[in-house]
Length: 469
Image (cartoon, rainbow, N blue to C red; front, side, top):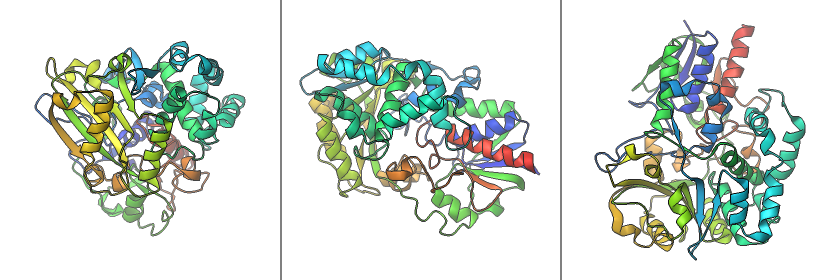
């Protein structure tokens, strides 16, 4: 009998498997698709030689993850690549605000009236960042806070809505960049704890940057799987699990799946009936004949570029997708241009480019024209460079990854109390009605992103139970 069976070979499932194998437990991972990766994959989606990330592409939380930093993943091929700027947010006048490694450079891009307030907001947390990130990514109850005072100060700034945080600033440049950071988790700007979401992304960039993985996001998953195999674990692909009886006997089962799938497989009925899924995304992967012709020079120096004219436009786009049930006419876009720093991603002189906007859950329309109109506002001539494009709306995204219900790449709405307490209002979110069954997907704290901490936290719950028994 195995000690642990993990279902799902995404970053969280693989991290949970590694953490348990490191502690001497026998572990096997079962993945429904024919390759591992979950939200961290790399594929030739458009033309031969153009390597795209179907989901996550840039990894500010990955490089800052306490779980990943405790593993020797660089020995297994993971290499983080950094552009001159972690992120840029261009405006229609040809200028840009930036999220730089330097707090000073970032503050200066906001203008003289907001430089001081930004410094006062972020600088107190940076000296304690490593402790702070471990504390808030390990909650709830998986570890005692190492620095409860700093965590409390962070909570005072981060638990209110991001609209409160923006009141510190007088001009639109800072407000727009922060609104874009909140939109990365598809949360309404006025939602609970959205100020903390913006702060986390900003502090992560200042602490260690906002890199891409050499060769693509698949490198993250491949490194985790290779490390697991060296620890004695096994990975089985093309193995769909429809019920618990499909799995070999084990002392514990850990699911890197949506709560909906877990309830169906384990027979939990309506246990997760109140779990809410968020809006979907419409994503386009481009093969380009050259670099994106951004008007703002700063955008050429960044791997991630946010697209939204101002905070009002961003807020309108988020409300349309999440509350009004319609696709926005001017979608807020998150774009990544990994070939700016990684020449292995495209043939010489060519580039790969990735962009998505938010749409209602399960939306079946085509947002391509709206996306490209937005891009042309900030990069005139963009369409002339397109060699090929691969589009994916919510149905296609859900078909690629069963965790993304209705195209929700966050595996659950990041709004209300569900921002922190997911998948249920519980102090033990990784447990389930069955004492030997656990959940470790992005539906659990600390939530979406390629960081493995949901898997890390769930693994703690598992090994505590196995030690007791």
